[in-house]
Each structure stands twice: as structure tokens, then as C-alpha cells.
Image (cartoon, rainbow, N blue to C red; front, side, top):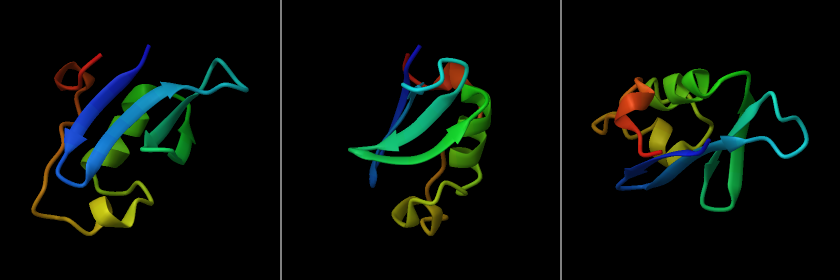
Length: 73
């Protein structure tokens, strides 16, 4: 299952990893910012501004939900 969350600096997408169906990846546009054991862990990094995507990680005035129920699926 894919999840997405739109922000002013880009749309985060959590989707299944192509090479390992037990993992997910975190994407913004055409750039992958990490592989995770679960979608919840990826959403948690977005919430904590700990993604590796500098535009988001340094934008502390913006928020994202940690709970996947608030992401679009």
C-alpha cells in the first residue's frame, strides 16, 4: 500500500520497496530518502524532520502527522 502526504516543500510518498517486498521506501519526487521496516517508521521520521530531505528537515515551522491514518492512501 502507498501512503502520501503533501507539504509546501514536496509530497512524501511511502511505498513498497521494489527489491524487498517486506520493506517500504520514503520518496519525494524521484528521490528515495530511505528504506524502512514499516510505513509507520517512515512516517515517524517525516514527523520528526529526520528524513535526509534538507528542505523538510530544516523547516521546523511545518508539521506532518506521525499517524498514518492522517496520510492519504
